[in-house]
Image 1 (tube, rainbow, N blue to C red):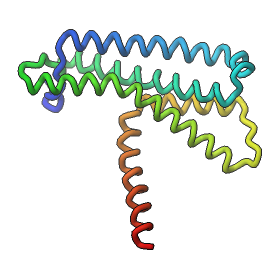
Image 2 (image 1 turned 30 degrees about the vertical axis):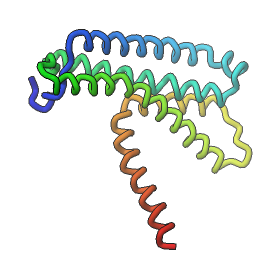
Image 3 (image 1 turned 180 degrees about the horizontal axis):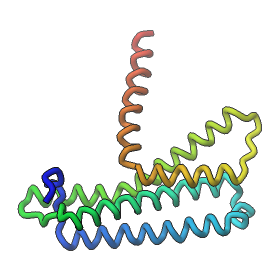
Length: 176
C-alpha cells in the first residue's frame, strides 16, 4: 500500500456500492449527454437555448466527475491502496470516504450551475440584448465537463476565493 493513501479504508460491500453508483451515474450522464448533443435542435424548439444550456451544465459535469472518481477508485484498487477497515476509527473513516465519492458528482452539478450563471452574467454584461445561440450551449457543455472532472480543485479554489471575498466585504463594512 502507498503510504500516502493509508486513509483509504473501504470494505468489499462499500467498494461494490461505489463502483455500481459511479457506473450508473456514468451511464446516465453518457446517455443524457448524447441525447442533448444529437437532439439539440429538437430540444431547443421545446425548451429554448437557455434551458438546454442549464441541462448541459447538469449532465456534463456529472459525466466529468463520474469519469474522474471511477478512475480514482479503480486506480486505488489496482495499486492496492484500498484496505479493509480493521477498527472503529477505520469504520468512521470509511463513512467519510463513501460520502466523498457519493457527494462529489452531486457537488459537480452545483458547480456546473454556477458556471452557467457566470457565463450568463458575462454575456449579459457585454451585450444589451443577449441573443444566445448554440455556441453558448456548446461552451456550457464543454467547460462544465471540466468543472465536473476537476471538481475537487474547483472546490479548493472556491474556498480560497470565497474567504477573500467575505474578508474583503466585511473589512470594507467595518472600516466605514
